[in-house]
Image (cartoon, rainbow, N blue to C red):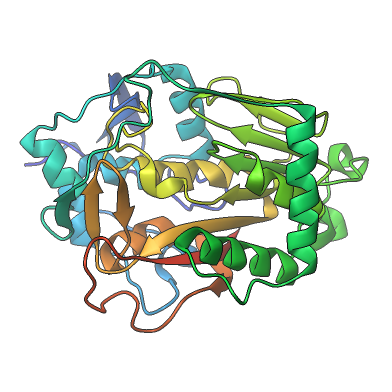
Amino acid sequence: IFSLLLCLSTLRGRGEITDGTCQENMEIEDGLLSREVRSSADKDARPHCEWQHSGMTSLPFGLTLNESLILEHPKLANLLCTDACELFAEYQAAKAPVSFTTSLTSEQRSEFTLNGQAAWHEFLVDDSNNGQGTHYQFSREDMLGFLAQAKKALQGNAKNARSQQEKLNAKVISALQKHPIRLAREEATQSEVLASEATRDAPHVLVLGAAEPWFESLALAAGAAHVTTLEYNRLDYDHPSFTTVNPWSLKRPETGFDAILAIGAVDHDGLGRYGDPLSAFADVRTLRMLRCLLHPRGLLYLSLPVGPDAIIFNTMRRYGAARLSLLLAGWHVVASEGWTESILSAPAPWQRRAEVVFVLRPV
């Protein structure tokens, strides 16, 4: 008999537990407060996982959620069944220090590969400065230079892009051109606009992960009034329109950010490359937490390496049918740049990946 009974969530922005009364035992695990959820109504019940909101099961590109896979991993199931803002609060409370390790237990490796559904490769990289953390600084002159380049890039096209980074830039720029950053409340009905946000006259954007202010500059050039960068390591941007914070000092605007850019960031989460704690499902946790941080009518610009499921430890994940469905659950795909029908299953060496930029809105 399993002791873990998964609580059900409507996942409407901030979900509600709907399956009986849950008693929670909290402990530090994987750099966040994990939760063992037990049902007081039926302690001997077989664990199950249902999603009452159609947004969890109505996935794009023919993807489906694998319920048996979720039930095999209690940590994953807890993430999917826990309120998004609770997850964010717990993550901030944990305050995991920067450290660097490549040591994995057999259980951790099974979690990373989803019990063998993802291929395993190793390409070790230390971007944590030997566990000491990094510190990048950009002067006012540097910032103005980035902004000038970003404005020029948004006004042109990038048809001649050749390198992987140039192609990714072109996709992000195309997504921003077709789906500009704007006040999220402009997409809302009159009854949905809170009094507190009615006075805000320009978009506030969050950017996840950065070593330089390029995507922040694109966001500002694309219509943002202010950009906050969330980065595990230390950043200093000398410009009044930019703020840099670590995960424990980030403050959520009362109604959420108008847009979020997560470009080349989520696939690294939990792999330890940047000194973050090893956590197999950190990428899933991040997408869940973004539902709390983003305005309900805001847009998430998300890039992911897509192809047959693979873990290239400790560098990145490649997202196939199994893992991509976990990330897109609860999101509506407004548009995508770089997607093709065969991309999920077409054989490809682990060194090669197709970077897709998704434009998403919370269901």
